[in-house]
Amino acid sequence: MRELQHDSAGALMIELHQFPTDYGLPNFSPFCMKVECFLKMAELKYNIVEIAVPPKGPKKKAPFIDDGDVRMGDSELIIQYLQKKHGIDIDQSLNPEERAISHSTKKMLDEHLYWVLVHSRWIDDRGFTVVRPLFFGGLPPMVRSIAPIIGRSSVRKALWQAGMGRHTPDEIYAFGKADIQAVADLLGDKLYMHGPEPTLLDACVVSYTGSVLLPPIETPLKEAVESHANLVALNERMMQRYFPS
Figure 1: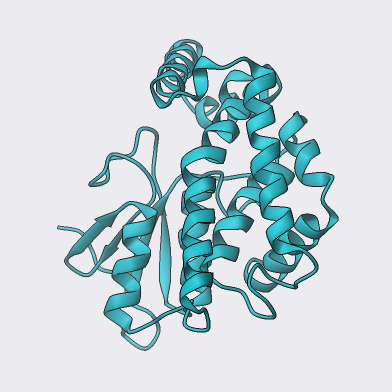
Figure 2: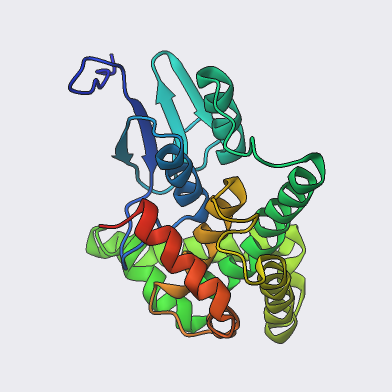
């Protein structure tokens, strides 16, 4: 039976299951990083449980949480569940139009830019030289030589099925640059995506800007983010506020 974690006051803690990480990132997965950023924004107590690849959660992907007897997968469902349970609305200051913009932008990042990020890490050799030791370096020698080939092939298949892998590298990075440009234009000269205080959209944005800027992967995707001073500043602002260590 799983041992439940409690904080110093005896309250039950949320267990956030996510991948190991490196390169100054809270997590190498933008979905894991987004959930952890939300937990910090909501000031909810949590404990991190590192998991292996492939994950064994309810959706067979990371992140997932254990909250008492509840096990929940998928970053969006996790955030919805925790907000409802604790009566929290991080976006309470937003009007309906702003909520619509936030929803649409998050979908662009999670359903479109995400696949550009995957290509930059797993298919582009400049990225895979960084990803390979992070995900496979701790495996036994025999497995370590085979697992990266199988893993990369699996990711290539997923990219093809998603549609992004059917394009040339130049086309893929052009899609990513357009997404980054849209986010930069939406941010403009504001401190955060919707004004003076961060919202859920900022948690989503920093999970991608951080995922691109911090690892030593030099691709056109990183060049795109670095070309927008406002996105670089937003990334630094969010990291200092929620992940200062």
